[in-house]
Image 1 (cartoon, rainbow, N blue to C red):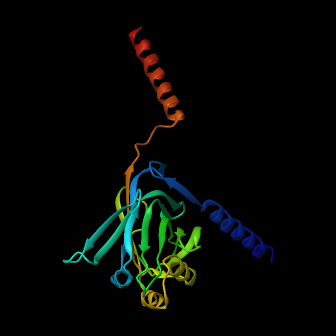
Image 2 (cartoon, one colour):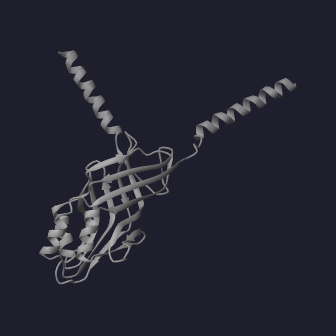
Length: 253
């Protein structure tokens, strides 16, 4: 019994030590972590074809919110969207010190959507999605959502669920790409979209057909930081040089 009790205590202490050693650390762009410097990074939100179809049907206009940039391709007639992507630069990453993997990423800037009363799908409005914060552990995306028609500004708003995570999530030297695909909107997100853009019943029906809002492609660029000797290393080097000089003097005598 005593042995079992001691084993349990030892196991509990071991688990507690493991939990204590595991933690998350926030690394800002330009900052360093675990011998790496976070040089740059961006998250590019590419709209799905079904979302683009809903935007075209409602006459929604898409533009970027600085410092994000938009890559928009129109059809041959220039009357509708063919592809829409908005890339926002990273502000910071959150890394798990136990696994050295990225567990969250925060960007700045985003996308703005505006509608004008078309007498059928909407009565006019606007909606901006900025400061995207992707939680890779919970597989949720939080944003700053600012909307017209009384929506106002909603900080850290739970907008999408992430379907699948592809690529690497390990923070390493070089360029690392991670994809967050199958973004599905939350009920609160759907209601905020509908109200802010002034969607009518027809507009809401069109938006409800969008089960996949798109993909976020995360690109992280990091470089190795040259190691700097500890002060104790310099001290040992100094003692070594002193020793060499003393031996040289004795030989000279």
